[in-house]
Every structure is written in structure tokens, then in C-alpha cells.
Image (cartoon, rainbow, N blue to C red; front, side):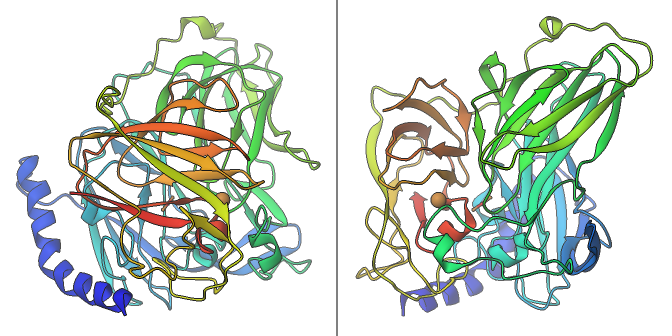
Length: 462
Ligand code: C2O
Ligand code: CU
């Protein structure tokens, strides 16, 4: 069985490879002593997530509460030790960070399982500033669904300064009336837009409020870590402008309104707080039938009288620009499938197939299920022509490399640099990138039920 071969191969090669990667990073940045790793202990906890009382079997990194928001610095080495105190295998994927393949956290593809009781040292240097996040890549519907989603802020000293900063981890929980977990998904939803949570939170709270300087400029970092929900956000009671999407500065700032933000995506807003002490700005989700206030900011102190127009641009990230004159075009289709294959997938299967990439319900009944979706040559430019043939929206995520949105068949688009792009029903988009990162990289829908039922492939850079 190809999967077993591959798994065996990775387990043995990773033992030798782990040292090589560690040394490589140390040598490249001239680090004499290893940096003290941030300990991320994956374990069970309990939390008050709803009015129904304390929820048991919540998972987090650390002892209590939400996984810590990790602070890194652009271009400086970072180290974390995952300690697995769960009773099943896990890993950590650093969503959106363009780091070496061996640190990417995808079992079977980039590293072996970190089994219960084991630990794994991640060391890497984030090349880009911005808002990112981390999560397991094993049994993800359950592990992420139960709490293992945390934020990453990569500080860029070249960014303009703000008067305040608030980071929001947006996610739902599947809880029953007694406040305890219910089935994480229903198969009939996995074949549609996914199974939604019953309790909606920001930073594990119903509607948290944060103080911010009156008349000041606040950087609001929003990250959708939910496994299913797509948001349409607005700010009421204050002026706000979009300054970055998915960690990268937007080519042109714009006001919120129509923009959808899907699972895996991040949105950085500059909010100009109201002048009056005690005035409230509300972040609201206006998508669907159940609008919800997500969080509020309360103005405190005398007005700083700042002006959004004075805000200098964010520092750009060193993402290479694709050479469009030589770029090879790679057609990718997203479709539904009627086939049901029940096989182990790259990181755990739900036992159903509803979706396919290039007609393959991944990893599917092809002669060689583990062949990559596409192979790229290091340093060459490519354009993914992704066509969504389904009636649902899919947030498509590429590991290891960021791409630029070139065009859409249905709307005007900005040349946004991103790692996760929401592709509408019946839309065809062109995404350009330089294959500048060696290795096998996952490519999947970030609605986890879709990811787990056929919509996960991987690409190879050699
Ligand atoms: Cu956010 Cu493959 O992951
Ligand atoms: Cu999807």
C-alpha cells in the first residue's frame, strides 16, 4: 500500500532529517546556542464557553484558556516545542508562514506523527510580518474543533505605530444545551457548506470588549480559525479600513462591506476609535441570517485626535513576484464527487468522499494515490488556474508559498498576496507564484469537512 510505504519512509528519514534541519537553521542565522523553545503543551482542559456552564474535553496549548498568541519577529529565528499530552497523535502547522518544509507540520508529508507522550521541536525563521496562526494537521476536525487554534503575530519593526492593538481568534464550538460537545459534523453537511458551530466566540468569549484610546488608531487583527464559518465583517461606530489580508498589506486600502473572510484567513483593520470617552465600536458579522456582534472596542481617555489618512503603509513582505511571461499554467478543478472511497487520507479521513481536485477524491482510487497534484521546478513561476465547479465557496490554502491573485472570471480583483483564497461558486481564478520552497506542500480547502472528504491534494517542488 503506497501510503504505508510513504509513512515508513518518512518515519525513518525524519529521524536523520530532523538534525539536518536544526543545524541548517542554526548555521544559516549564525545562532551559536539554540534559542529557548516556547513550550506548547497540547492537552485537555475545561473552559466556560457558553452560559450553559463549563465545557469538558476542550483542547488547548498550555494549561488553561485559549492557546497563547505567539509573538515572533520578521527575519528572526523562533523555536517551539510541541509536547503531546493528548491521547492521540498530533503536529503543529504554522499557517501562512513560508518556512522550511521539515517544519511545516503535515504528518506523512513533512514529518512523522508526534505520538501521545512525545515531543517535537519546531525551529524556523518567519520571513514575513503580519497576522498568522497555528493548528494541528492531524485529526483536525476534532482537534481544531475542540480548541487547538492559536494566533501568531509576526512583528515587523518597519510597520507604522498604532495606539493600540487587539487580536481576535474567531471560532465556533459544537456544544449541546448542557454545554458539552456534540457530534463535530454531520455527513449531510460535509457534502454542502459544512457543519456550523452552535456557540460562536471571539477569543473564547461570547462578545468580548476591549478598551482602546479614544480618537486613537487601533490595529485589529482578526483571524478566522473556525473549521466551517465564512464571515462578512463590518465595523459600526467607528471608521475602519482594511490594511492587510492574510498577513500581507493590501495593494490599496478599502472600507469593509462586501469582503468575505473564510476559514484560515486573516484580516487586519485600522480602526479610528470614536472621540468620546465610553463610545463603542462594534465588529459585526453580517453574513447569513444570524447576524452577530463579534466584539466591541470601548474608547477610553481624552481623544488622541488621530486621522486614518495619516497612517503610513505597512511594510511589504519579501514574497517573490512571479514572472508572468514565462509562467506555466496549471489547471486545477474543484468539483463534487459521487464516488465514496473510504481510505486513510494525508492527515486522517472521515470515511466519506464528497469532493475532488482534478477529479480525484484525494487520496483516491488512482493507480498511484500519492502522486502529487503538480510538480514544480525550484525558482520557476506558475499560474494556478483554479476553477470552482461546485455550488459552494471554498477557501483554498497552499502551504509553504504565497501567491498573488491575478484575475477572476466573475469579479474585479486586487493583486492581493495571500496563502488562502476564497473561491466563489462557478468562479475561475488565476493565482501566480514562484515555486521557491523545496518539498511536498499540502494544498487544500480550509473548510475542514471538505479537506477531509476529498479536497486535499499536495504539490511538489524539486
Ligand atoms: Cu491551516 Cu493545511 O492548513
Ligand atoms: Cu471547501
